[in-house]
Amino acid sequence: MKKMILALAATSVLALANDTTVSATMSLMTQGMNQIQAGFLYSNKKDIAGGIKVVEDANAIFSKVDVSLFIKNNNKIQVTHNINKNVNKHIKALKKAVAADNYSDATKEYGQLTANCIACHKIVRGW
Image (cartoon, rainbow, N blue to C red; front, side):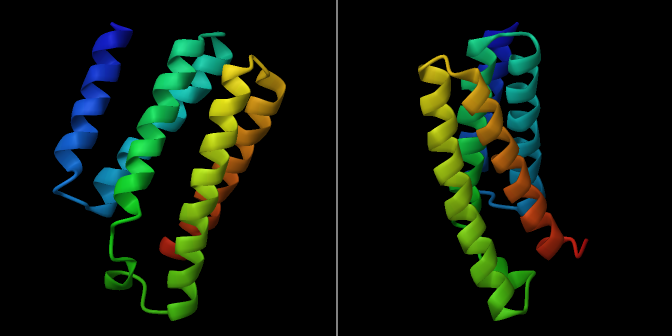
């Protein structure tokens, strides 16, 4: 079942490469974040790794989105680009911590990843 979910997520990411809508990409990021969290809660390294891959792929799609279409403030546009880079940084650190079986640091990186998601939502959704 888990392999099927991973395959579906990977297929979804590839299919969305041509359809870079924000809502579809954010939906993938949500799925990935949920999968990472479930992996932590159930001590399942494969779920954590699978969720990281989904978030990583979705963030790669989002990096190609022209955010100026829905954000008019140039400063906010730059902030979203910075957040995108921060997400990449925290994904790499999360992957490294999981590979080293250092789940304490991994959960800290997951928290930083979540903080970046919320920072972007403040801008995009006007929280």
